[in-house]
Image (cartoon, rainbow, N blue to C red):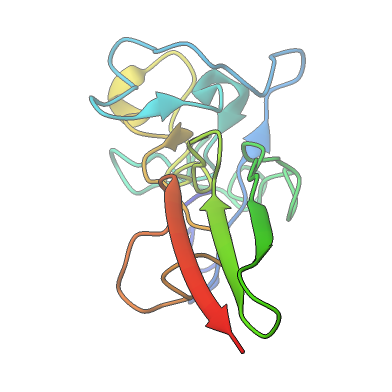
Length: 176
């Protein structure tokens, strides 16, 4: 993504929304290894910042290729052109009935959310694409920086609890 900018009124002009970066031909889009000067502590690198060039130089705010209508254009990446990490979630629900007497039953339930305790991450940071080969303009770009939660869970949705770790709930019920 690039910042909004106008080349003397003749280039990129958009008050809101993203200005897409351009893809560098022949460079792989994804890089899952830390990159010195780009990957910040506590994050996981997902996109290759050298595969994208910002339409705007984030260090100067001017068009990356020069301040002219020819050079200062929207990038060629396009909307929804990249993929984020997979979302893996496994839940299990077990129930067992025990006949205690002719009229009394005991039901025991177990609910297991994220059984395998698989971490799931949100989409990569897509601030400024920067300039390929200049890590100072690419810091943090394309990194996975926060976990995300499923739409369902033991704590419900949006109730202030973190429902991304493994959670187990047991319940016993007498029925007569």
